[in-house]
Image (cartoon, rainbow, N blue to C red; front, side):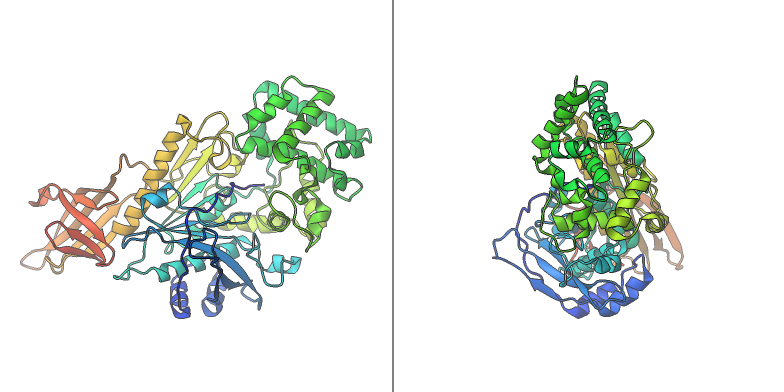
Length: 572
């Protein structure tokens, strides 16, 4: 599955207070991707939030917001979210972690959030974890309410609620940066794309923004990440398994991999081959290819199969072949027992999204490793068998609206990793100065940075991310026009570029404007060089006859910059 591993919660969130009027007023300011969702939610969003705090000190306390299932639905989804405001300061930004295709277990403040003393927010994606309709999750509800746009609107609604709960005295919006990895890296990008007035920038780690229908690049990337001897061992294992199936020994192979649940079922052979391929691919995906290669190198035929079985069992457990995610019969059951790595509900929800919109169907490329049974037709047959649908039309609409690997958006940093099979569905270049890109290249550097750790090869992109987040916050905070009471009628403007290239702790900026002469004419000046850090700004006014290094601090309560000489520029 396209998932970044969930991180444990770090600090307890406090309960929030919010009136319906505040939420709806903020919601009307949003500019969502769907006009239908916009008008409906603005008039009907239920701001019912059920406080589920276990105790004031609990780090797993959550709140829920009831949000309509769709613009025409009378049903709702109780979407869970967490807020940590323990570092709250007058100038704190809001930093949001997007919900992905799994259960969210609380909020974690990352290094960027801690550095900026942010209000940390985590949202759980609808239809994952406990964020479900009260009636459960039937196929009817899936088709009505489980899609990308609805999930983005959940995040926007909750984000606007948090902003309303932590207002500044001046009324200026706090800067907002959202983070995500894998599918949630894509939605981090798309949230910025859909709601540019709400979120100021996004960090997309392994963000799969190119929702490829037939994703042959996945298998190709797995092959490229392996050295020749390891790849030869894996190819030998898969070739031998395929031969056993062709010889009528498929049931014996399923028993050998402890997947007898797939014996004699409609899609059992395809399910089994997908389980094998996804198993060894995930080991590579999450930075564990050395473990896989140790079990495979130098092995052929049945010995290679034995090595693959050993690798899968050691990594995932000997019940991996019974995981509901790889069992079409299990996926067809709406209210079956919880099972599998993702949890049965999460598995079913993600497979539904793949089968109706995001796709990423991983078929075998020409000369690929995975089984030749895994064709696009076979994968779509799985979808049709389980959900009665295929992703073709929904996928085409998604990519048309979002732009695939080249989304039309600003202030998004895309990060990739050399051993990540999902890179072929990601943005792999800087699309513009405000859409920087950084690739971490090292042996074992996998999905969302798995396997990078403290390797020196990861330092460059970590620095780029730090600079990017600082620039986005600085732009949202300082960028714009100001009123200077010392010069009535004059104009002042701060320009902050987001490039991910700031060095050290200072973000480059410039100041320009105009004064008014005795006859009322405008006298332009600037741009003047400026530098912004977490504490404030320094501007060189010497070309105007002022000080070379005038210092100012941002004061959110006063709504502008307080200069060292005491006067204030108020942001317009």
